[in-house]
Amino acid sequence: MDQNTSSEMKQSRMTEFMKLLPLTLELAGLPKAEHGRAFTADQIEGRALSIRAAYKAARALVKEIGEMGLQ
Image (cartoon, rainbow, N blue to C red):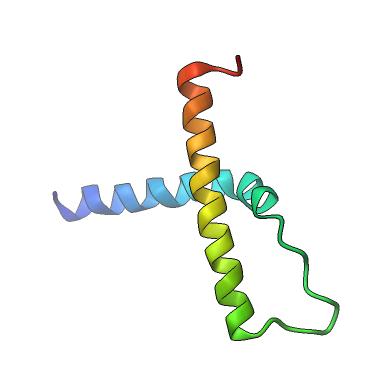
C-alpha cells in the first residue's frame, strides 16, 4: 500500500467518524461538565472509553441499516 492510499484511507476513516459523531455522542449519553469545572484525567479517560464503545455501536447500527434496512 503506497503513501497516498494510506493517507486516503485515514482521511476516509476520519470522515466516517465525524459523520457518526452526533449519533456516537448521543449513544454514549455523557453529561456535560459543570460550568467552570474541568474533568479529571481519569474522568476524561473514562469518557473516551465510553465514546469508543458508542462509536462501535453506532458504526454497527449504520452498517446493519445499510444491509437490512429499518424492518
